[in-house]
Image (cartoon, rainbow, N blue to C red):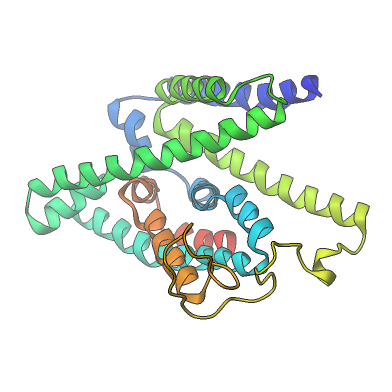
Length: 289
C-alpha cells in the first residue's frame, strides 16, 4: 500500500517539476512569469476553473454532510449551478473590460474604469483576505487526505509543510503558466478518478442500497427531505433543529456565499490571463454545472 501511495505522489510531483522546468525555459520577461503573458489557451481555463470551483466547494466536506444529514445536505451541490452561472456572466464581462482598458488584473480594471488608484489597494486587500483562507482550506484538505491515505505514517502537520514547500518550489520555478497547467492536469485526473471509482463501486455492489433504502442518519433527522423553509432555534448546539439544519433558506444562503469563489479577485485573475474568452461559458456550464 505504501508503495502504491509513493507512486501516486511521485508521478504528479514529477509532472509538476517537469512542466515548471519546460515553462521556465520559454519565459522571456517578468510578465510571462507573473501572468503567462495573458495568453493561456481556452482548454487550460476550462479544466482549471472547474477544478478550482469544485475544490473550493469542498467535495469531501459535502460528502461528510450527506453522511450526517442525508439527502437534505445533498441539495448543497446545487451551489455548483449558481457558481457556474455567476462565473459565466461575470468572467466574460470582466475579460472584455480588461481588453478594452488594456488591464492585466482585476484591480487594474476597476482602477482604470473608476479612475481611482485607491481601488487597487482595496482590491489587493480583498484578494489577500480571500486567497489566504481559501488556500489554507485547500492545503488542509490535501494534507488530511495524505495523512489518511498513509494511515498516519505522514502526520497532517508534516503533510501541510511538504505540500506547501513543494507547491512554492514549482510555482516559483515555472510561474503562473506552470501553476495553471498543473492544476488543469490534476483536475482532469480527479474527474477521471471519480468516474472510475463510481463505476467500480456500482459494478462491485450492484444496486447500491442507499438509492433504495435511503441513508442511515441520526434519529430526528430527515434523511430524504428538506426540513422546511426556515427554522428558528436557540442556536446551533443549544436547541436541536427539528428534522435537520439544512432548510431551504440555509441551502440558499450557502449557494449565494459559494458564488464568491467564482467572482473573487483571485479566481478572476485566471480568466484575465486567458487569451480568448470563448472557454468561459463552456467551462462553467458543461464542466462545472
